[in-house]
Image (cartoon, rainbow, N blue to C red; front, side, top):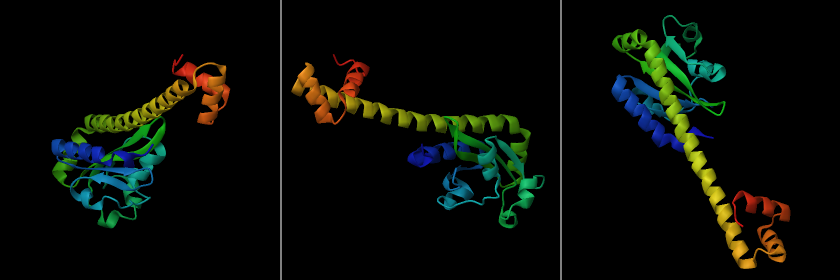
Length: 196
């Protein structure tokens, strides 16, 4: 499953969060590529981010992370520290079925934004986690629909073949042959789709 399949949706989520919270928002995939962003991050969509970043830490641990630049050890070791303008971040993993697909982050670039993040860090962390879950649900739903569609195509194909060749023993052998599947597989699929 790949977040790149729903980038427009993710960008919309980022923009809505940004508008409501007055912060910049970004989403970075598990290969550290930024695929969505607002404000400062928008011009950096498509770029890779530093492997020393806190986002990388979130990918490793699977835990949400609050970063305060002047206090965080991870920031002091980051090779991008000299030109990083972020004062504070809340990052949370975007996970689906146990796999971390990326990191959703909100960033403060002013003292006012930083103070807002820090005074409501628990609430905002939970909010960002909820938005992360929303992204995961959208991706799951898309894949679920795709699987249902493939199942529907398979069922329809078997139905057409049965209509063409019949459902007696000889007809079913021809159906299996036409579909390039074994006769036992055909009968399992007939039972699965309740085609009798």
